[in-house]
Every structure is written in structure tokens, then in C-alpha cells.
Length: 337
Image (cartoon, rainbow, N blue to C red):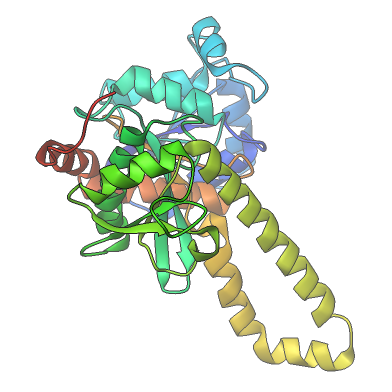
């Protein structure tokens, strides 16, 4: 049985929601859960959930927490018993197979980097987020691990994203696009122009630049960008979905005829909500480090936590880290910074 280390103190609603999602995963998936956090708080959250005692759940005491307002580097130095650091160390010691956290993204990236190291040939880790498209799903990376990038980092993201799209999405020959402000290779800033040339000369199935309006079209299976741009894209998309759902709900409740229309179309409406709900995807994989890490949204619900654990379990079963390393090793065009 795969053991997953869960940062019980990470997230806006920790530990309650995190523990609830972990219990659901232990109950319905073939996984063992190590809940890492302040033991008293974790046990109190567990006691609020019925019938957890018979489930494969362990409590690992870690009394400190990296708060969202803290500098991750300084906090990890000051707090060696921080929950994210203790959880990452469990995986590094092979006492767990993967790490799941909805806490401070910077702290999670730094703790994973320190505990696992990088896959040979990779300079920077990247957050690979699965997004819905008109044709199914696509991978967007980097979604927030690196605010500043060099062209060779975007090339490496494209290679790792291709491997991830094959394993997670079932794409046989993933199409890789570079997010820019125009389709022409001369468009964009110096970063995107130089990255375009590196991707064009690489072994990935590079289709050229992708504009913002094409992100959700399905034209690309992998969309490459720096972490600042990727995070803005995700946060803007989340806000747009919430606004559309609210506006649509207001309109459907507006008149008797619209309420009747809603009753007739509510199955389609529910399917639409599932397709655009981030909790369905669980979290973003941190690719490039020599260990399995899934980073959840700070506002993660119990459902999102459960799905993040399922995602980590699936990645472990597909030997994801080893396959990324093998792909990078085969790609001689990956330069180092």
C-alpha cells in the first residue's frame, strides 16, 4: 500500500478540511496516509470525522507551520519542525512515496528541492497544472514555482510537460505551445523569443506560439510559460469561472421561464461545473524534483484534497519521476544554466 505524506497544516482551512479529505482518501483509495502537523490539532480534526480509527492513517507530529505571509526561505530555516519540511523529509527517507500540500507554495517548492534534489539535467522545478479545454485537458507549466525564468528553463518545462501529458492525459505525441502575445515567432519579449528558438530546435512536438485566447481551445496539449505568467493565468481563470457561474445563476433564477429552463438543463450545467472545477483535478504536480509532490490550491476543499492524494497515488504507480528523468537524459538538447 502506497503511503502519502499530507501536510495537515497547509491551506486556508487547515487542518479540518485537509484531514477530512485525507480521511476520504484513506477510506476510498488503496493508500495509507501520514498526516503531518501539530498532533493535538490533527487529532482534534480527526475526532470530528466519524469512524477514522480503523483507517490506515498515522499522525506525525510537526508543531510548526509556515504561514502564508512568511518568507519561505527564512521560515524553513527558523522552523526545522515545520509540517511541510517534516512531510518532505518523510518522502526523502522513503517512509512515504509522495507529498501533498495545500500550504505555502514557495515553502513547498523549497522544502521539496532541499529534501529530494533535482532530476539530473533539470535546472528548475515547475508546477504542472491540468486545465480543461474544448477537446479535453491540457497541461500548463510553470503555474507558479518560478517568477523569473531563462529560455532554457522554458525548454525544460516543455520537455517535462510532454512527459506529464503522456502519463497523466494519455496524449501519444503531445503538442507543445509557448504562451506569447502573438503567433509569429518574432512576437513577445526576449524570453519568449529565445525560448521559441530553443523549443523549435528540440525534439518536442512544438507547434509554435499560443495566444491567451487559445489556452482553452485544445490546440496544444502542453502550454509553456514562466511561473509569474502562469499563475496570473490560473488566478484570472478561476475568477472568471466564479463570475460566470454567479452571473448564470442570477439569470437562471430571474424569471419563471428561466427557472424551468434550468430544471431542463441542470444535468448539462452540472457537467459544465465539473469540467471547470479546480477541485476535480486535485492540484498541480511539481515536476523536476526527484520526488513526487502535488501542490493544492490554498482554498482546497476536502474533495480537492482527496483528489490530490489520488493524483499522487496514480503518479507513483506510473513511475513518473523515473520516466521524466529518462526523457531528460535522452534529450541532448537540454542545456544547463
